[in-house]
Length: 52
Length: 65
Length: 216
Image: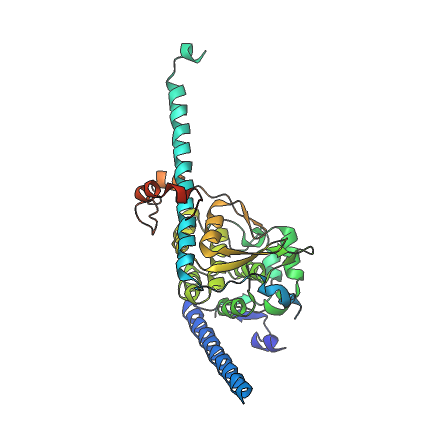
């Protein structure tokens, strides 16, 4: 269980600060933008394939 | 993934923004105007009630009968 | 190191006793009604996605799983991921600076994160702060899907915020009774709200038919 390891044996999870929340927002946003770019790319590739 | 069930009818309602920015702004403006009007009417209603209470307070015993 | 309990057991056990109260004086463990709380902690989403989650993980969970706002839905009255995460926030009790990240910086990028935060603020903050935190988003016209017992419908951030400020019940949760804005203005705790549309008298005088719902 991944999250059981993350919280160790204590059953506690570290409180996040506002800065850490902002970093997470940035990270999630970048990931989503990256995924979108890849979606467009694969769509483009698919269209390429269809043209052939 | 049990919590993500019924994926198929998820397209029923589309929440994509900025498909028609002008219409979306106009619709928002109408909602905002309605809220303002509602709030203003509530305030007027309350003022009327307060005025009525004040008026009754000022009536003499005789007038109240 | 500041920590949270990974699970909700202590949170639920402390009901009415030693747990910290929300800024509005309510006990966060009992803000949602008991049957709703039971449905939440029994749900698969809660067990699988809300365990050992902190304030930053909330962002991931919202973006990955929140596709609509609402409380319990369907005949089975299943709790929405939105409602489960709101319950998680009640357990975490984030500070105002974290909430500002959800509402502002994060809320611009992820509308459902803002929607979750406005709901949470309405449940836990003092009346004056609820108005101050929420009213700026009466300007946010983005679309949201609202899911109720009967189905999905389109709503908007401004409409959701207005509902939170004026209705008694939203998302299967009874909202605590706040003093009205007018009352707080009379007590000089709040300045009158200025609409982004500008001078209200002019607007109402110039467009009466539109205001009455006639439209164009």
